[in-house]
Image 1 (spheres, one colour):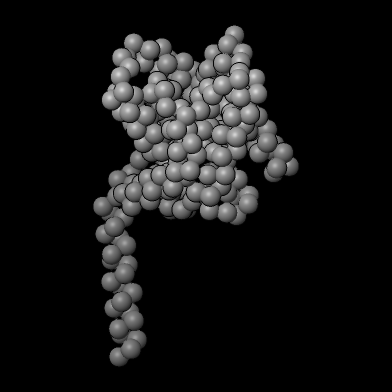
Image 2 (spheres, rainbow, N blue to C red):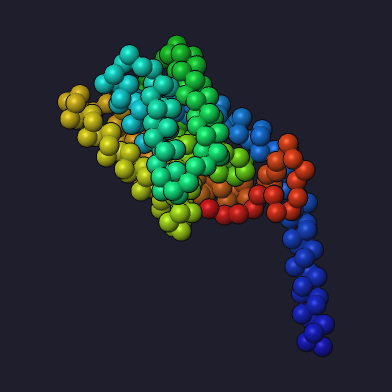
Length: 247
C-alpha cells in the first residue's frame, strides 16, 4: 500500500513538472543576446540622462570619459571590459575563447551606447522625467543582466565578470554582484574626487544601484526561470543544453 502511494506521488510530481514545462515559452539564446545588447546600452544611457548617477559598472568608464574626453564613453566601456576579460583569464589561469567572443559582444555594446546617447540627447530634462529616466533605466538594466545570464552564450564582460566570479568563488551571484558594484563605486569616487575634484557619474542613484542591483537581477532571473526556457538556435537543442540553472 505504501509503495502504491509513493508511486502515485511520483507520477503526480512528474505530471506537474511536465505541465509546468509545457506552459513555458522557448526563447533562442541568440535572440536573447541581441536584445541584451540593445536594452542594456539603452538602460545605461537613460540613467546617465537622469542626472541621478549611472549604473555602478558604467560609472568607471564614465569618469574616465570625463578625465580623457578625447575618447567616447562607449570606447572607455570596452577598454574597461577588456580589463575585466583579462582579469578572468588570469584568475582561471587559462585562455578562454568564450571571453574573446564576450569582448566582441562588449564592443558592440559600447557602440550601441554611443548611438543611444546621441538619440537621448534631444529628450527634455525635468525632475519628473529624470526620475522616470532613472527608474526605467535601472529596471531595463536589471532585466537585461538577468536575460544575459540565462542566454547560454558569451555575454558582455561587465555581466560575465560577476557571473563567472560567483562560480569561481562558489558564492551566490547576488553577493558577488553587490561586491563588484561596490568596488566599481569606490573606484569611481577615488578617480572623481582625486582627479576631477568633484562627483562625476556618482549620485544617489549610483549608490542605490550598488546595493540593490544584485537582488533585482536575482528577482528577474527567478521570473525568467519560471516562464522561459532558453536554447541554442544554431545547434540542435538537447535536454542538458536547455537553461534551468540558478545563479
